[in-house]
Length: 192
Length: 192
DNA sequence: AAGACTAAAATGAATGTTCATTCTTTTTTT
DNA sequence: AAAAAAAGAATGAACATTCATTTTAGTCTT
Image 1 (cartoon, each protein chain N blue to C red):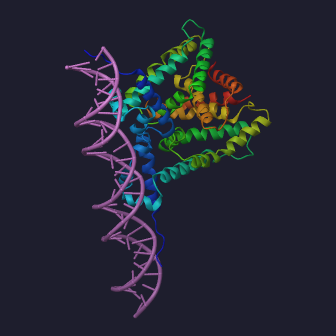
Image 2: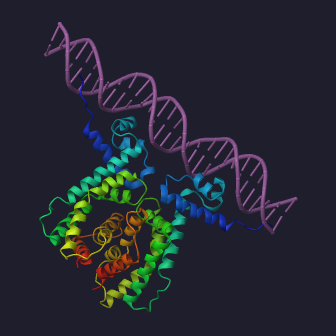
Image 3: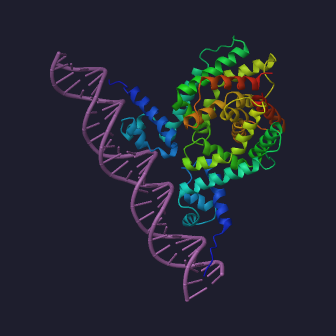
């Protein structure tokens, strides 16, 4: 019998086109027809890979989020001291946001709009657990402030998103010196 | 002759409906017909007050942004010492985001998506000038770190937006203690 | 002060377009 | 040859905007 043979390249092209178009126009202003055209595929073909438009964007979100966290936690493991672990993760996240600008912008947009299903949002959140664990450990060891993880995230990790959006809009140019300053500010605002 | 008589209440109702619907569904998923219905007005009536959908959302953005900055800088003037001025502004901003949740959410969404015209975005940015001036003064006086204003903003003001979004989503409950912690983190990350 | 007049304001229905999705046919793969 | 993959065209729904009327409320006349 014939084999399942759906091309992984076609799927990738669809994902990439979705990210690009949603970044520039937003979810509802990117028609399936444009996604198809940019991926050099018929509109009907999209439906061989995804159930519908919502499913497409949900899946892209989860995949990009997974790639992001894999990148962020690449060199981290739970044996590393808290301060060092934080630096490793923070800098990997900064790296990701500078190198994978398209993906990072896409995540920022998803996280700030009602574009994504609540279920997919939850799914994406799960991947951040190692960071929450690190903070718990830091608090237990008396190294970082005993604050809600949301405050810690807000003041140490999330500001990067803002900087990235400003950079993307050409408002200012983020360089290596800025990043070092930003890291100091991030760590300074959470360490005890 | 007959007078110009367009009702300010109708316009306000349209603005309010736009904020509410865009918050919950996003710009492109809120039809003019729904905005009209929520404002108890005929769809055609919207076009007496606004040129088109894009104009509507641009104008709402600029008006909400203006209200936000007016609120933020209410008790501030340039004679106040830097540290005190920062505290006043920061706490007013926090106040606004907690009290005018709908308006604040709307701004967050506009600032993170391609929903608004670039021109309107620029227009909205202008209003923040007093804060940039305050930072310049702080740097001259050697009170705050000599960083790019974007870094200062990212680590002191912007985290509030993140906290607000999390609160809005019911992820966690922001209370007065949290706010004091957040203020300390904000000031700590920018003072020299 | 009542009625008639006028222009703005408001409306509901119509229009034409855009778009997600499906259908039917063709192409590719095994 | 058969079954999956892909395609392009067709379908029908949703939507922004416009159109043709009606309503409202100032102003003028008497």
